[in-house]
Image (cartoon, rainbow, N blue to C red; front, top):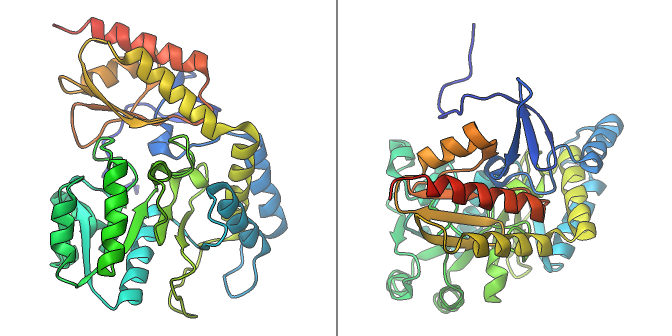
Length: 380
C-alpha cells in the first residue's frame, strides 16, 4: 500500500479538528496552537466566514484558468493592496511561497538583464530551483540546483552587500522581513534602509520575502514596514490564505511585465482568491494587526526575566525564544504534558512562537506561565 514519502520529522499526534487557536487530536486531546502550522493560520482554525467563503465559491465556480477574467481574483488583489497600503502595486497570484520567490527572482532578472543574486546567511526562501539556491542550507540544495550565481553575505552587514553590488552584475537582493527558519533573526531597520538605498544606487532590485513575517504578524502588514521602505518586489504566502494554498508577488508599477512573461495554472484560482479576500476582511474588521502587536508585547514582557532564556528575537507574534540549551526537550514537555504546540528552528536552541493572530490575552498568559514553570524545572 502506498504511503506518504517520509521526509518530515513528525510529532506522534494526528490532528483532526481545529477551532480558532485550539486543535484536537484523534483521541480528543486539545492543544493550544502556538505554531499555526508554520505561521499559516492567521485568522484562526476553522474560521466560519473563511470556510463559508470557500464553500460558496466552490459551489458556484471552483476553478477556471487564467485565460479568462476572474473577478474574485481582482477583488483579492484589491484587498491585499488596501490592507498593505500598496494600492499601486500589481499582484501576481501563485500557489506557494517558494513559487512567489521563484517568480520574483525571475522578474528581477528580466528587468535588469542580470543573473546574479545576493541572499543572506541562515536564510530560507523555499525548495524550488531559484528559491532553494538562495536558501542558506546546503543539505537541501541538490546538485542540479547548485549555482554560482547566488552569493550569501552576513545579515546586517551593509559593507558586505555593497562590495558585491559594486560588481554591477546583481539582479536582485532577496531578504526575509524576519528570518523564520533561521530562528527569528531580524534585519535592523537601519540595515533595511541602507540596503534599499544601495540596491537603488547599483541598479539591483530588492525583494522582500514576507512569506512568514507578513500578513500582519508583526503588528504592521509587512515586517519591513517598520523600516519605512518601499521595495520593488514583495513576496507573500502562508497567512494570506489561512491554510488554503496561495502565494503572491506584489510588483511595483515601475517594473515592466509583458504579456506571457509569467504564468501559472492554478495560481489565483477562484477558491484561493475567495480565501485571500476573506482573510483580509476578517483581519481588518477584528483589528488583528493591533492584536498581534499587543500579544507579542505581552509575551515578551512576561518572559523577559524567565530562567534559561538568553534572548527573545522577533516582533509581534513572530517570536524566537532563545534558550541557553537545546529547545527540543522543552517543546516536548509543552505539548506532551501541557497541551501547547510550539515550533523549532535551524538554531536548535530556538523555540519559535507563530500562533494565529486571534490569540487572546488569557491564552498568551497561559503559555508564558506554563513556559516559565517548565523552564524553572530545568537543571540550573
